[in-house]
Length: 139
Image 1: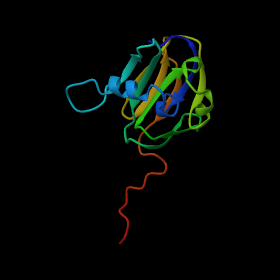
Image 2: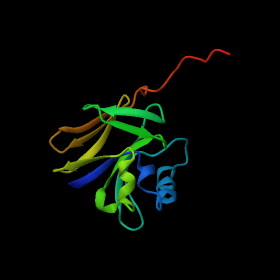
Image 3: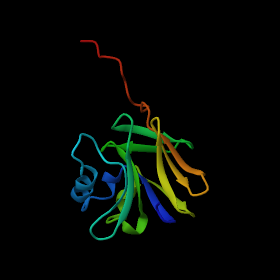
């Protein structure tokens, strides 16, 4: 469970520049293919959570129509005070106040940030992004 507080939600590659290598080492710390999803702690004690998107990179929307551009194939959260450069959060991140402990739940392409009472504070559908074109280009 993540503790209550003010969090940035979106693709963590935008706000974790100095720690990105460590983040990737934690995400790919598996013997098999794929990425680990869940909650992680950096060596300095910073805690964050993330989950891979259903279709990788793109632009996804939450239940209120807010957009989340994704360039690292994931959406996660980190406390505002743990972000190295707060100016970066303006690029594709959304800020939320979580008043209760919460977790990230993934169901059929939907990433939800759910509090201990079962309320979905944020729900992002990572099905086909709005700017995805699955038709082949004519040559």
